[in-house]
Length: 469
Image (cartoon, rainbow, N blue to C red; front, top):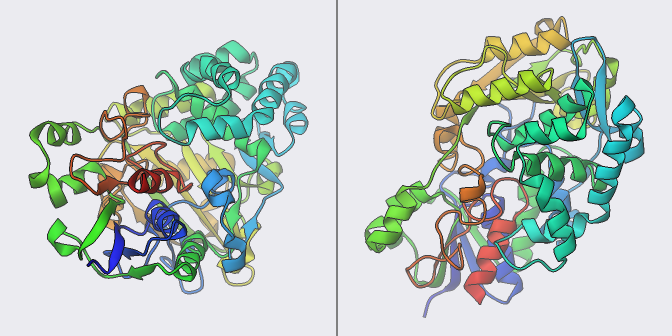
């Protein structure tokens, strides 16, 4: 008889979520992790100077707080504490001002001049229906429990973000704010359904906030692992799985990997048709990321930027749209849209007293090895003159190095594959249960399954439920 009811390969948020879901159902799961530490995109490490703790990938987690799966876990009992900045997002502009996505819809709308009414009506409706919308879109394709809310969201969400911004808003400032949020889609803003990302993330900013984990994102992984241990689950690190033969006997196998790794591990066991579908899975642009150790806070020209942990550095809608289109087309932008996070303004535990950390990344062509340091820092200097004088040390990773760090980031794609209409609910293949494979007992639970990228655990949760069913 097998010692474990299930073996999960990969200890990212989805792998841990799958293990917890199975353990709560009475199974005994084993998690195997190739690296010496758990977490996937949730690791926090000292990559610059001693005493400076940097999140290797994600830092800000609106979906971590809003996720129906995470909401049902007692993670606070296992050391997870959320930290909120006074504003959720800052968007500096070339005139020296900045717009803020505040927790309050009314406070945000008050900055938007003639667009105030349009913004308030849109976001008030979304926040009113936030739980229904998250329930529908944080999972596989299925009949909506609240069809009117789903249809009401779906009509604008299917539009390109650039078009929706122009239809809804008249002022360039408002369009820029929406474009910065929508650019998290990592697709050109002219593509259909990019508006959905702007609407969902904007809604989350008002409904739950864009929080940090105190002490670093690694604390989320630590809390998940501690809760899993309480439930009787086990984790083994330093165990790389190269084939199915590397797994102990078990009834269920769940892989927190993308189609490319799945093919390497079990491709010879799959039928030819399924194998071709996995081979045709599409990956998107990568990211170039810089972690900074700083002598002081970033000297933003617009002082309001100090109120938000997340800063969207990109200027106008047109600037952002051009940058995102160039990355998709295989070109490196001279003025890249840059996502920046400044954690130690609100969580001083991550740096020595009086010092700070920040990170910034931009989207680049798939598999890029080009150094974007100068372009990113030029963009930051554009809105924070003197920024370079604050840098004590920096650590960079180009897109290919991101994949070297985490094989799930194929070509630097941190979303586990393109999230467009073709690969939204049918990722990684077109199947009634997208998490299942033709091999009995083998499931995929990574961000290459619905609902895709983000720290929410829902891919792992739904895959585990499919395995249990």
